[in-house]
Length: 98
Image (tube, rainbow, N blue to C red; front, side):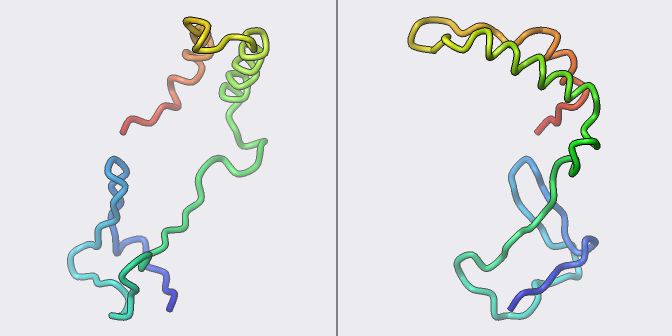
């Protein structure tokens, strides 16, 4: 049996990857399977490429260029080159802390 829970019936703890039912709500039916009894489906990201902020697209292009220029670097040969500071600065406002 598959059922969709209303958004207001649960809380999501992203730090621990846990879904909690709010007080007064219950799981739909008593026929949940013991293993894999709950499936979570969600949509993440920006959707269409045009919706990605210009700063993120620019950071991606800079990082790809950096990785291309340093494509022979490996961890076995020594220290890897650091991510360029410009990329870090462009990405900083979009970081999500867990």
